[in-house]
Amino acid sequence: MRARHVMTQGVVTVSPDDPLEKARARLTENRFSALPVVDRGYRLVGIVTTFDVLRAEVRGHADAAVSEVMTREPMTMGPDSPVTILSHRLRRYGERRVMPIVERGVLVGVVTRGDLLKTPPRRSFFDRLLGSEPDDPDDLPADRGRFGTTAGEVMTPFADLIYAETDTPVAAAAAALSTHRFTALPVLDGEGVLRGIVSEADLVTDNLSGRRGPTPARCGDAMTSPATAVRHDVPLAKVARTMIEHRRRVFPVVDDAGRLVGMISRGDLLRADSPPEEPAGPEEPEKPA
Image 1: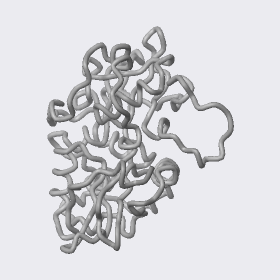
Image 2: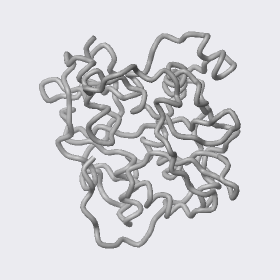
Image 3: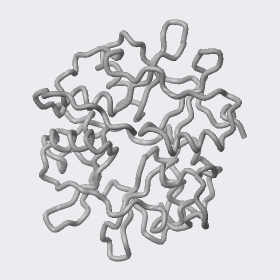
């Protein structure tokens, strides 16, 4: 199978001269983690991510142009690239989950980790995991910014979460991530205690990794553990800075007793009523992904 068989066409983009606010709006409205940056000839000149936008806002640079914060000369692949190589690169290189597909310098599509998880819907998975018919992506409720200044006030509350258990089949978790366009699910044990996080990166097959042994069949074997969580009363500015410093996409949110009460993502922070801005300090070199 080739990249052209799984890529998304008709890509939402921004230009390098666009204000960062425009990129922010398109990222949050579409629930994307990254946008290709193209010139007037639709030639790829960079990529801008939720990480880039959030970092700029934390450092007080929310009024910057896209060109000032984007990554230039991002990794790309061609439409005839094998999916096995594409999967390996998405899983191994960088913190981005989007691979631009370029032909003769022109952007023709993108492939995300979510695209690689998509399989024809199988009712039995959703019966066990969701207990209902899978939602049509076009019918998913629109994300709305929540008012507040702490993690607990802008998080996605537990009642709205889809979570996995340690014995949930990885195929069912992959189906949930793909259908609901999430990047990660919290993993709970049989008593409801948070045990880890299972993400797209954990589930995307990488046949070129060189690892031996059976592929994990249950979320308890595939998850990242322990899960780093934040308390519900932590200020958004601290959550944002911690996400940037540790290159995390999402944090579980726990109450005073350590129980899971929600999840907070980069998207939640960008959709919050007030950007989590702190005074800009000396910039540190970005750690290699």
